[in-house]
Length: 391
Image 1: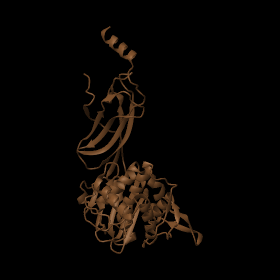
Image 2 (image 1 turned 60 degrees about the vertical axis):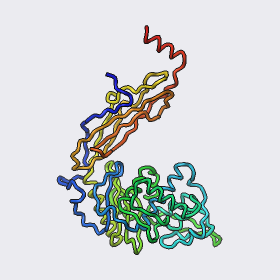
Image 3 (image 1 turned 180 degrees about the horizontal axis):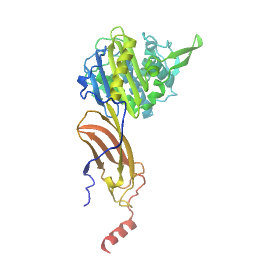
Image 4 (image 1 turned 30 degrees about the horizontal axis):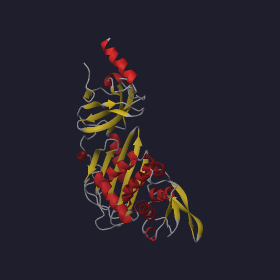
């Protein structure tokens, strides 16, 4: 019986090659039952691929985020780069306003010129307020214009408890977010723009100031000590002020599992690392990596209307790793959706999607792509096809 091209094939399947990542024999199944003894007022740990929360403590408590604000600024910066509107080699002229930023800075001077990449390095490694404001002004014309974009992006990402007042994270009345909202923007940055990790893993570096006063080097040192202290840590952003106390959005990867741990208002820098480490340990202990292979037999033929070929080919052996949360007893299912195609079809074009779900939670999406071009049917092909049906 022929399957409808636009139908959804729902298949229950058995996973093979199950590999558990650092899992103890007994782990609490509900986030609320874990006793991690955190000093942080608010905290979450999230599985990055699916966005599943593994643990939360007052996840929606609105608090000042300090320089963790820069996760959103970096997201907008990398969106500009990936769109082609901004290049790493572009020159940025530092304004009086940008140079006047207090707090953490690299002491840029008015009219100093630096490349986009140098300023990104300053923002990520040294959490430089002057550098991020210079980039914000370069992109949006003013810091105010950039902050407006930050709030628009926050709304788009579903960050319901976030209001940004500046691009750098200096304390300002009404400048608040939550641990969960930080996890959302951290996930968007790291999953959509993985080039950020080229900078988050820099331990020490230098930049060169070229001003009227002459040329001199300035040292950069990573504010995120976890990249040296926690196995698998890949980033992401620290923040601290007298009001916000000590905040951190930490990313880490082990055995194919990618996690985001957020702590807000920890007591001090050492406790911030202790809190984030405890969250990541808990996350890795509760994640399982499973492999599944989807074959062409499961997908079936994908037809092309008005094409020289009636069907388009694709990979007949698609292997994926799916991350699931231990303790979730719902059945994992796989849905295969194929598109209704009309020629021409280009090689590499998405022609369907494989979706892995645990209940209503989407764990993974894998695109099915055409492995060949299918041109439009010409007159001669049309005649032969009609003739074949009757003779």
